[in-house]
Image 1 (cartoon, helix red, strand yellow):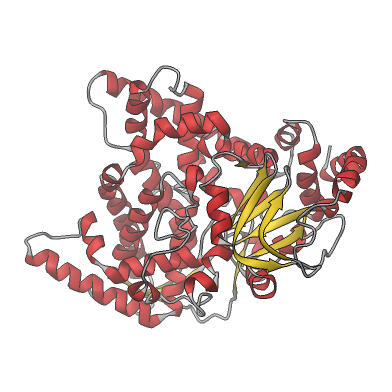
Image 2: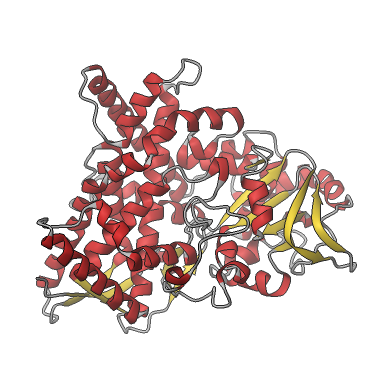
Length: 542
């Protein structure tokens, strides 16, 4: 069954129920928001078609940090960028606000039944067992793996430059290189396993990861988007059943990736179990996870299928997100030359101190002594939360607190909102990170200096890292955020130390698409998938 037939069948089957559901009076119907562009599609098509941050800025400017918008068939939903409301949703209510079922089913295609795609008691149990592997000490221990992968990129780019008659410079698609390097980094740091992505792009596992989510979810038609929206009124599992039968090449590749990932994961898990039994357990994340699982109470332990799911979750979450974060980091440094030069000066100064104490290169703790590096990293994470939004649905009626009162369409002033059960809320990580009430009147600008002067004390702290929402918060915060921050710092120091980055000057416009993750594409070449070209010039190092 193709998407058009599926859309028609689902629409007919559920339109009566939907009409009834949408006609119910709701306490959120008085909240201001953008005019519904289509009763059938709601705002989702408009939302997905716009460049990342365009929608968020418009809503913040015209309606504030809380607004009403529409899902398919006229359904009222809430857009949330208010810190008190977000704190309540993510941290103050346990599992009252849960991921919608269809979102869980879609995530399970990419991540199986891992930490990001299960809810309730299963999520509590998995997180309890997994958490010890992601502590600060454990994350810092992975620095040598990251440094090795960062140095491999340095070597490859030097090699590319040396083979060109280009006065020490070459134009490079930095995104494609980061996609490979971060896969190697996650393999090394998380599993002590060499995927060989940088050295060999022909292996089937690396190919299956190339632009995987963009191809699967980046160019949805209106009909397919409506079909995904309507799955929420279908019986549990129907969405999964449909997606498993999707014949598009991108979805076929996604399922093939799952097969490859299961093969690799099963092999790795068995090796780690044998190492643990032999008393030679390693420091990689999977070894720590297998060890923690074996020491857990019997009713908490993960079965083999759940451990495989964690491996696949770590592969995806620690690979594609970091690749895009690093891509946008270099883009901003190329556009903001003064920031790049100031960061390079700090790197050079710190390297001098390192050598003065008798060491030859950076250690992970040196990053904490580099305030401008920390500021640049935080500002990148603020402007580019690769996951832009979280979707939540309410299990039962709840009262949502607000930082600032809202004046309703009727003129009524709301200091809190009564939200009915079943309401879908979009917690906008990007809009929160751009909220001028939190980050100042220049919140839309990339300005790392704000972190040097800022008092990082907030009335309603929500994020796990510097109150940014990039890694979410509460019981569903990103468990590997320390891992991600250390990896980002490692790559930035290695690359800015060895290369200068500038815009290629070819007039090709970069667009930030939003297929679930903020994704760079070149205007007119969207069909080629993620790309970001920069001129990379080798520096004369000491």
